Structure formats: C-alpha cells, structure tokens
Amino acid sequence: MGSLIQPGQLLVAGTAPGQLNQYYAFSDANSTTVTAASLANLSSQYTIPAGEADYSGVAYEMSCGGYGQQGSTAQTLKIGVVIGSSVGSPAIIPTSALVTGDVFAWSAKLELVCSDGASSWWYTCTVCVDSSANTSFSAVGANSSAWSKSISSAIPVAIQAEWGATTGAPTITNARTVWKKVS
Image (tube, rainbow, N blue to C red; front, side):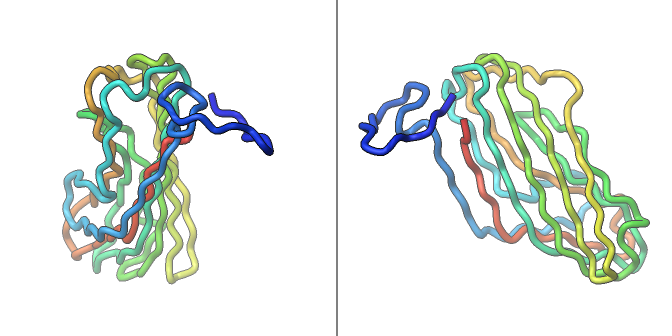
C-alpha cells in the first residue's frame, strides 16, 4: 500500500511496495469505433505484466471516453470489460436513454483490484452517457464473485462495447484511454 511522501523524504527506486516505480500511468489518443452487435474493444488494450500484481490490494484504473450516435432505430448499448479471457457483466444503456439519431458523449471508468496478490480479481465499471437531447444516464457493471486470473501470466485488460443490433447504424467512438496502476 502506498503512503504519502513527506518533505525531505529520500525516494528509493525499486520494485517493492511503496518504492518509486510502484505506480505508473499511460495514456493514448487512439480512436476506436464500435458499430457491431458483438463485443469489441472500445478502449486501447493494456497489459498487467506477469508477476507485477504480487501483493494484496494492488489496484489498477482504466478510463476512456468519447462520442457516439444512436442509429435511426434505437438500440441498447452495452459497455463492459474483458480481463484476460473473461468478459464481465456490462453496464447497459437502454434504448430509452438515447432517442433515435441522438448524438452523445460518454465516459467509462474501470476499477480493478487483486484482493490476494495471486489470482482473485474484482472489478467495477461505471459508465456515464450525456446526450444532445439533454438526457443523462449512468450504469454500472461489476463481478459478484472473484475472477481467478493468475498473476504468473500477463493479463490483458480492455473496455469493450456492443450494440443490441446494427439496424439503424449506431456508432460509439473512443477518443482517449488512460491506464494507471494506483496501488
């Protein structure tokens, strides 16, 4: 677990908990558009290196956001996560939240924690949508039991999206992704 840096404190580089390189962040502005009725990566995919999450309570965050347009026929929109090969319960934006042809802005934030420093992973993915029709909607997806993903192998992580159907040509586009190791 991290601690606050005190004035005049010696900062030590190393890989042990609390040392200087324990936390990091990456970002990109890679644009990705999803128009399919099957799950596809919406965010950039980042990978937890093998062996990195080797202590209880290690945590990561991913955030992304962008814009989209509901099709000429209203469709549900699902935004969820894939961690390793496991696909999580998505946050669901119902057809009632976005009227046909509606332009919208959206953001998603994934919080991911390894509770045992070995293989037990928990996540929450919060999604917010704000449309040009002045409707706002929030939804959350989360796992109800720990996912088993061994830290002995690299673990890819991404936020994904899928439309209920492609009828009406709905689109959602990611404009940026931020990936952080936070504890």
